[in-house]
Length: 80
Ligand SMILES: [Zn+2]
Image 1 (tube, rainbow, N blue to C red):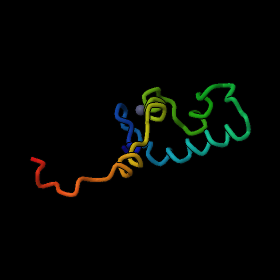
Image 2: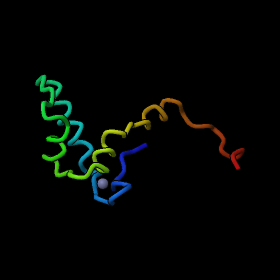
Image 3: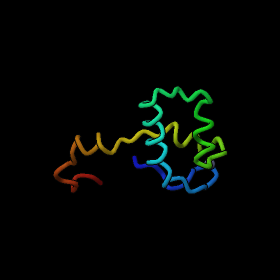
């Protein structure tokens, strides 16, 4: 599943922050930053204050690449 454009709970637009979130996490891993203040400081720097929005980032798992690898049925006519 693709990352949602809006938070499902509060409706804040967050889709444009997904790449930034992953990039910041990647940089933290490279620099061996153990995020001493936890992810809270990361979310604050990105302007995300609500827990519902935090949950959207922490619980998201991209499955579309796995779905593409599985392929698609050749014939959808049997699906009703
Ligand atoms: Zn939210």
